[in-house]
Amino acid sequence: MGAIGVVFGDIGTSPLYTLRECLKAAGGVTPANVFGIVSLILWAIIIVVTLKYVSFVMRADNDGEGGILALTALASGVAPARLRQLLLTLGVFGAAMFYGDSMITPAISVISAVEGVTLVDPHLTEWIVPISLVILTGLFKLQKRGTGAVGKVFGPVMIAWFLTLAALGLSHIIPHPQILRAVSPVYAIAFLAHAPATAFVVLGSVFLALTGGEALYADMGHFGKLPIRLAWLVLVLPSLVLNYFGQAALVLQNPAAVAQPFFQSAPGWGLIPLVVLATVATIIASQAVISGAFSMTKQAVQLGFLPRIPVVHTSTHEIGQVYVPFINVSLYAAVVFLVVFFKSSDNLAAAYGIAVASTMLLTTLLMYFITHCLWNWKPLATFAVIGPLALVDAVFVSSNFSKIVEGGWFPLLAGAALFTVMTTWHKGRQTVVERMTNDNLPLAGLIRSLCDGANPPPRVNGTAVFPGGVVDMAPSAFLHNLKHNAVMHQTNIFLAGTTDNVPHVPDDKKVVVKNLGHECYAVTVHHGFMEIPNVPAILELAQKQMPDWHYEPAETSFFLARDTVMATGASNAMPLWRERLFAFLARNAAQAAEYYSLPANRVVEMGGQINL
Image (cartoon, rainbow, N blue to C red; front, side):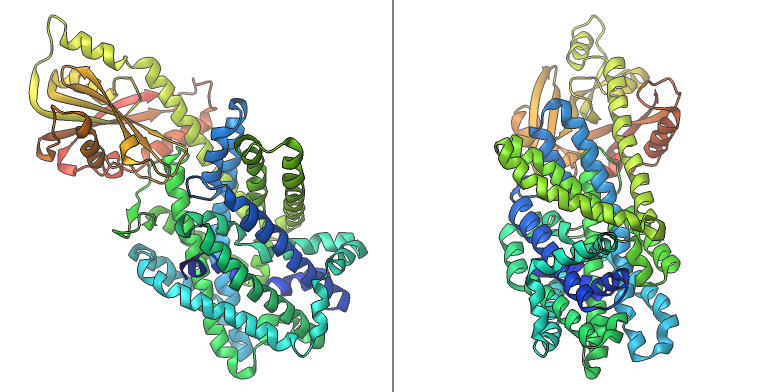
């Protein structure tokens, strides 16, 4: 029930516009066009969604989690060292394209559903954009309340939606069963062979039937493989196929219905209820994509591809339910722009597809390393599976390139901007860590020289915790405290975090404590990329390995480095403009105290400067 309600919203609302756009690209309604296109849609769904994602890609789970970043972390962990940076780059590009898709899905889904009101009254056409904006504004405004309460009704609504799709399709297939001949791939092949240039353009619209296929893999961690596979094979796939074939049968009998074949397939009395149901279904589809963007952001922050961004947990029971205010506002602004600028689902369809097609191709390329390096498939078997899948994805990517001028530039531009931000932040963090490693002192040696020297610094009562350091290096906040206050606390704990290539690290493996002597401890913390650091919780775990110390919040002070990054142009790692971008991102990152869940009244920030 949960999987049906969340996972299939995007692909489940594709019948609203897919066949219409395909026939428009093909030049109109002819028997050859209709039979060929509906056959192409069927076999595209079977090959890309059923065979590739449901049967193949979903086997490559990263400790139960899916999605392009989870797959990247898994592949980079098993690939040869010389290729790991390339794989990370591919994964980041795929994630950036996912954000581009997240902007378009709510816009095209909602506006295509609202367009159904024009069949009720043609004079309502001018109200399509305002109504869509009102619905989308309400949707984004509700995000801060969390999806838990709304999610309970998602499943039953989407089941009703898919059963409606199947019923509408059957109502036109039964009187015109000849359309079922299009099940044969011969019609798809004949359509491709008859006019290859036109067919190549049409494939860009056929791909609209596949948007949302990546969500099956991305949401695997929420529901597991079996529920998603069962829901797809038993309900979603049959309902989609029946509806596409039903629309095809309708336009063969009534070519004028091609303007809105989905809504025209409903009887007159059912049009208004169908518009209402379609609108609710598109809201659910939009919600799934927005939630996916929140989860992707949390992963990207943990893997070091985005600066710290405030993340709000909206549920005390489900760790995956999060709300990211900055991403919510950014997506809302992009969606409003798309609705106002493109104005119709026809125009938006021209912008849709290229982003998600790119992500699908990158997923296939990453799967090569999973099959060859992790599953130890022989080269022949690897190429026999990956080769055809990559070829299909490449054809869809190239066919979507014809949409760039008509609107595909938007997701590409948004994706390129996000890719630049993510790679700049990742490279900048590496540069800062290298600079700190070169400039700061080894931690163990510094503690010995301070405490065993002739004039050790005076010790004051309480515990000082220094989060966010580099492993085995003295934190700058500790050095600043020594310089300005000339004291050490009775107990000093130096926390250095690393993010492993797994979603979650069990508590018994999360913390490694190293006793440096003189009541000083170096604590290495291992997080998964689905986890957000919580320093108080880490200290509760660490005290189990420190028998002489007990965590008392009222006696613990947290010292954070508030370093200012300066772009000097002297770095060989990045050009000056990227240094300036990194410095800007660093200045606007969320406060470390909030990110680490620290009590505000126990935090001391020590300022410094880092020159790139």
